[in-house]
Length: 238
Image (cartoon, rainbow, N blue to C red; front, side, top):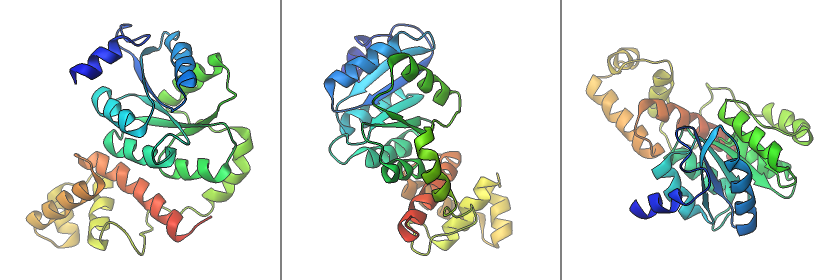
């Protein structure tokens, strides 16, 4: 951790006080430097951390917990989609934007289904990049006009929140527990609804947290919804 802290202190904007932290995951060193420089000029952004591969990005994300992460679609070793999933499991509150030089509808939509909140093309100018990152941090979905037709078509095929995958990492009972957690139900309330003992509900909840790689009920609900969409994509490909 000391190595990470020392590295971060050398980055532009790292001493700017409290504010938005941004993580860049891109194998292109020149692109990383240009984005860091552009983002560090914003008063809203306190620190910009950068990684050249997925392992470094996850290490930085777990330590610094960025508000926004920019993930290149081909970041090594497994690509941007794999990193999007890993980042959101590790730091569910991070808002992820993907980045690519090619307008690939399928790749972008897959990233959105995995939990990304938008996509940026490499042709974006520095001022616009900063604006888009800040807007993403403020809760906006960043979707370019060229993507809208394909996205609208894909959304028609996305199941609603009550749909459960036929083949899933979670059991049917665990999905029932997750849906009640999403309603804010307590352990006792879940036990009453499902006619189970509180200890059994606790065991199911613990299993859900373990399978989804999260530490809280709130994060489990977010991760389960992401899993639902990922499994929908594999069982109902667009």
